[in-house]
Image 1 (cartoon, rainbow, N blue to C red):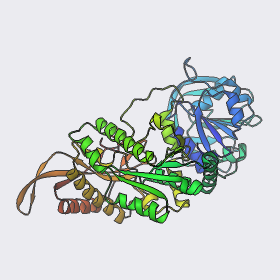
Image 2 (image 1 turned 90 degrees about the horizontal axis):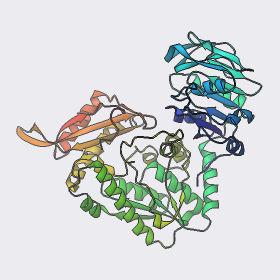
Image 3 (image 1 turned 180 degrees about the vertical axis):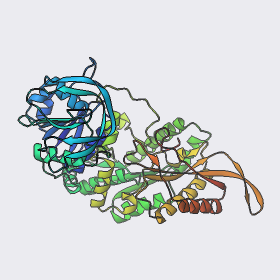
Image 4 (image 1 turned 45 degrees about the vertical axis):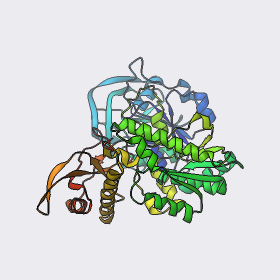
Length: 516
């Protein structure tokens, strides 16, 4: 189950790295959007009744035989279409224009001149800067089309056929480097597709609660609660829909951050008055991980044991009909290949997921079609406390994959104390909303130090802090030196077993956010 509004824009996925950005920009304009396979049948599109279609960019060339092409009938549906980069070239090629390779390819910031403002460029300057990334160009317009904009090397940088409401742009309006791009997207949504800006957290909440009520009826629901914003919003929406029919299960595997279990109890048991089962399973998890150093084995062991504990607790509750979980839209996109591409597995997904078949529960996934930033907006609307709304993403295996090596209770305690200091100092510096994630890593190596005129031989703590929009890519956060100095002084002086503090300045790629 997932909540979808009635008014929507469909984005046909041709393999562009910016597909999620297109969907986000449409939603930033308060219009719901959804990414679908590029070869979706035109009849299915017609049945879905979208207000408009966007053909994404992609790495292919329309001049190659094996390139992805949409169902040709999409251009005859009478639905407004915006083609972006490869999407515009597809439109030109499939509607009898001519596409050729460019002699001078355009990549990066490019100057653009507007030849015709209405409707795409309405209200915009006639001379703009845009972000280009292409090696092909439309050399001859399809019948019925006219040129809307050009660049120094592309005489046809934007096209349109107002009678059929078909438009294309050679550049990428969805990226940050096209600063006015959101205005062009809004012009397409509001003026061409006649969409209303009605996609808001409040509307989403009403729709989600209505869907949950209709689906669940009088049956019981369980929800795995981690204390993170995704599972917390899921639990709150389900609780608003079915009340005491919901039981949340919180499994403390022993690898949580300091004080998190107490926060979960206070928020959901005391404040929201939910049925909450808290399970301290730390002892059995530590036994399972004894001597395990391989990160993939850690994840699998923790994931499997988590499911076993969850099954045991669910079994005590009697007959259950549904399992609620906080699946997000990026999880769905990344697990489905719309272009037939094979993704290389970097590592197992951090968050414990996967329902054992023998439980045979139906899934409730109210967040399945929204992004992380939208979840935070919803969290604020349902009055979750700030420490949950703005909680950093936290991996399902917890601190076990931030200890590089064998995991023991003593080492978890060391990392908990150091991690708490890092969080406190970044919060005190007013940086908690600017930095996507910030935490400590404990590598099991030792170095020599001097404390109180005595030789020490202890562990270092690695400070990891990154900026990101969606965790797909990230850059290391430029924390002020004074903040780093306070973190280092406090960690070394206050955490027994640590005598050194270092700062990780690796971006993603080539690194990952987590070390394991």
